[in-house]
Length: 456
Image (cartoon, rainbow, N blue to C red):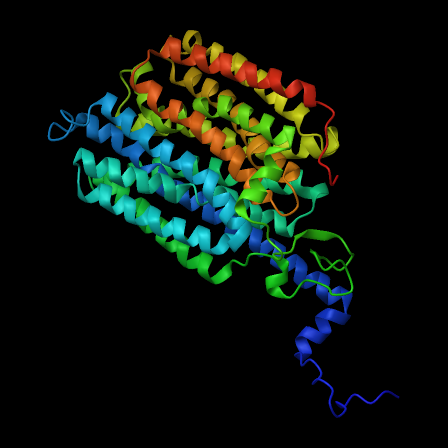
């Protein structure tokens, strides 16, 4: 029998706890622990990104009150609000290119925490002052802070889930931003106009909601399976794995430099195609997200402010269902091929956008709800597949955050138009441009119809 005591001149044996020893040697217990952590990471990252929207949507809700407030609407005109939206989205785009790379180098946790703190501070500043310069500066901070959420959290999820399940899992997970866009406006609108009768209250309510989420994130989130003792030294040291030997995702070691990550990512033609398509897709979603209540009020003049904030809920409800549906379809119907699902969704979106103005000309609330629902399910389906599942799938093993950040950065540049154009263009011109852009995105995806992730 081997002597376990240390010999003279030898190193002391590694000391581990009984719990660690059990988890290393008992596959059933190790698998159960892995499943618990996967569920926990899914839940806390889902709640975190949904929480970002309660600050992001505050400005959209506040616009109705600002445009009706004689104390501020001479300076904060509709055109100025559109410019402020574009300032926010420009900062958001710049941040997307940066934070995904930082998440690959330093881990998602530190980046996301910094983003939530910045978003809370920016919202409070906008609630305290209506000066144009304060609004503009706070929106720059808000844009940089909001962009610290998506790519790092996609990276976080990619570390815990495999390619073969990401269509379903990340499709379900991507309902977070649809839910945020759905739940935040009526909640903030109710507080702002029914409870406090003040548009400033929308900003403070959003900040308070995100502060609660920040506390939960600090307690429950971890960056990778390795951080919770789920890596197995008998398996590939560069991947954390479950008990059945399936890799969760890349371990956080030997991280390449930022420039090297970008060079590697930019060499992938699929990642570049996703970026261009997302640039074309994003304006339509952000126009409705940022200007939905105003668009509804213009098409249905007799509706009140509370009703104008409630009708776009149809857009958000459909958006909750869409990522789940398209994720399942891409995994099971198209066998992990992401392009076919995108093309179908973009085709439906093109038709819905082209028909928006004729269908809503009647002023019917029911028709408006139905059209927004169709637009919501198609735009959110394509959005989730391009920005999350495909971006993580086609990014390199150590550069998933960089790929997601690059794709989302391109989309955010397009989103600037979604925030800016509704302040200056008529509805007919606006929705025609959006329809053409969606059609072009679908055409660009067609050549990649049969392409699958390199790890599939």
